Image (tube, helix red, strand yellow):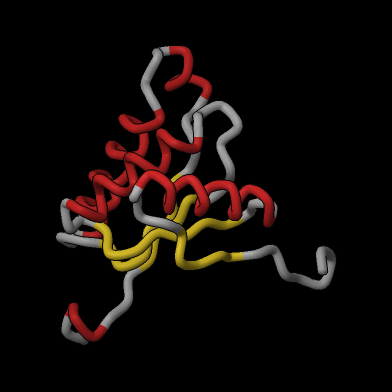
Length: 117
């Protein structure tokens, strides 16, 4: 078994579900809840890379960034990443994060396979 400090642990979270939107659960609440559940499931105190799985068109990006920044400053997440987004979305998010003094995305997991190049 490896020591925790010798392992890089990454996990993803999904946008709010239709049920969460209907129940008026904010993007911040959904992200925080997802993070807490991941920490419990993994039996960990923190996640090295927490990845925003896909752009959430139903939640303002500032809400996503603020929730992720809170997780970083609380020590529950070391860095944030994003997958399945357009370059302009990443640029918009990181520009906003920089302007507001929030954590920015440090990794991108792009679609790369034989069908979608």
